[in-house]
Length: 175
Image (cartoon, rainbow, N blue to C red; front, side):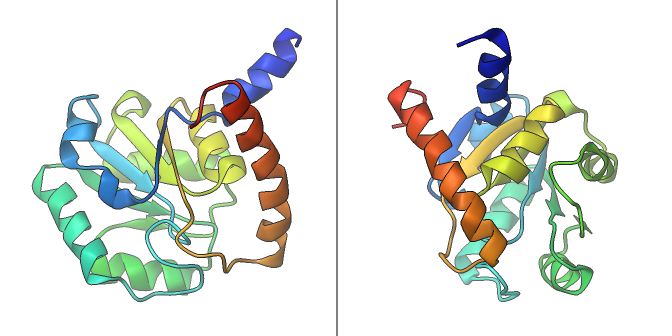
């Protein structure tokens, strides 16, 4: 593989993976010098299209905040849904982000008041959350989607994502 091919794979590869956010305790972030979290909405914080937040997710958010970590939601979704979840959890948000563009990640960093070196991005999509986070040199964490429900276009991209994940597993990057 030439250097351009290796560079592409590197751009898509998360630094860490987790089945759910609940696996990520405050100590995981603090030991890595991370003070701010940029978290995707759909299929990461809540199931796709939902604005109902589970009790367990509320507890996780409180635990993260109690440890002194800051959170900002970054989503491609429309503002009314992102705002509903953000206000319900008491955390700021950026909606209609058009990830993986850099601008919305910069907005989230400004809201958090953190630098890229001390910020993690967590999301369920390699081509939006992880690629965008890697473009900004954030600590990227890829999670398993909470639901199989999603936009038809996202379902199409998931096919390509499965090929990327298969390649990462073959290389021993993922289990």
